[in-house]
Each structure stands twice: as C-alpha cells, then as structure tokens.
Amino acid sequence: MRVEAGAINAFFGFDDDGSSLIAHSTFDEPLILRQVSASGVPGEPFAAAGGEPMSLTGAAGPVHGRYLAYSQTEQLLIDRDGTVHARRPHAGSAGGEAYAHGTLGFITGAWYRDGALVSAEDLSVLALFDVDGIDNTDWPIPANVFWSLLDDGTVYTSSPRLGDSASPRRARVSRFAVPGSPAADPIFIDHLE
Image 1: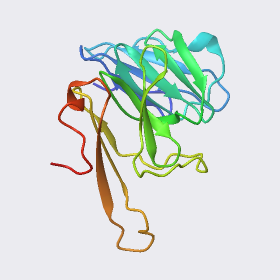
Image 2: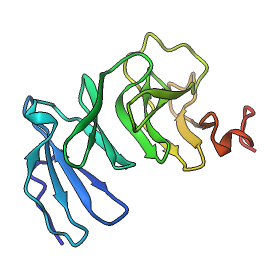
Image 3: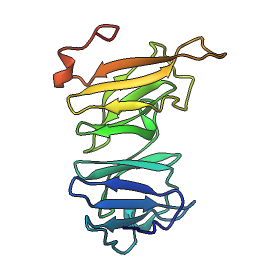
Image 4: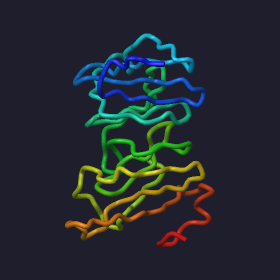
C-alpha cells in the first residue's frame, strides 16, 4: 500500500484498528488532515481547526482518539475529524513538541531538560518531571527528546550529564512515575534498581 501524504513534513498517526491519520501544513496555511482506512484506502484531504492557519512543526498520538499538534507558538488537541478540543500557547510549565505519548497523556517539554505530562482531554499539566534538579527558567527551549511513557505510569528519559561539554559525552537515564499511577508505588529512589 502507498498513500501520497501531500507534504514532506507530514505526521502519520496510527490507531489500534490499523487506520491512520496524516497531518501536514505549510507556513501560515490551514492544517490539512487525511484519514486512511485500515485497508489503505485514503480519504479526501480536509482542513482542520475550521481552516485557520497553523504552521505545524509536529504531532503525536493518538491518545484516546486525540492528537497533539504543535507549532512554534501553540499546541492543539484535535481528533481525527479535525475538531479542536483544547488549545494553549506555549507556557513555562509545558509546551513545544511532544516527546512521547501513552494511555496517560502526552509528554511535552518543560523548559530546558524537563518534561511535563499533559492531559489528552484538555492539555492540562498532570505532572512535571525535573530531570536534573535545576530550576531551568532561563532556558526557553527543551533539550531532551528521548522520552518513554509506559502504560503503568513509568516515565524514562535520557539526557547528557551536567558538565559534559567535551567528548566523550555521557548520557544519564532518569526514571519517574506519574503520581497516582501503579508505577508510583515501586519507584522512587534516586537510582535504578
């Protein structure tokens, strides 16, 4: 099966039933969605979010049938029909791209090395994960891009060690738990068991 996405920078999201959603936009043009059935039959492209312009830089999902689309300035929570369920500008507590997603929501950036779990219902911040223990309020752009969110609420990320500016650079793995999740019971000390 082959489906032409219509753009170089397209996002592909796959649902459990095998169907998929293609999303793309060009600068200051509407976000274009295209549904593709599980058998590979593409639907017609259509404009999401009422046809308003959005310069898509990426997307993630689905989580409970919703996708997190993001630009340089905001995040949109949309469904496969293009309906916007929530939106918010990038803020200090969370924003930017989505690093991971799972049944509990989306992991997005939160300042320089930190992450935030945001809800797939309304984009509210459910938890913050401080990777390095430093108040990174002077860093507006997140730097960690290697995150995993497991269904039990365990969160993993890797980051460069502080002070490693010259080669060889070393990586550090951090483990967190979503508060109130099953993973919150067996975790948390300051190292991997």
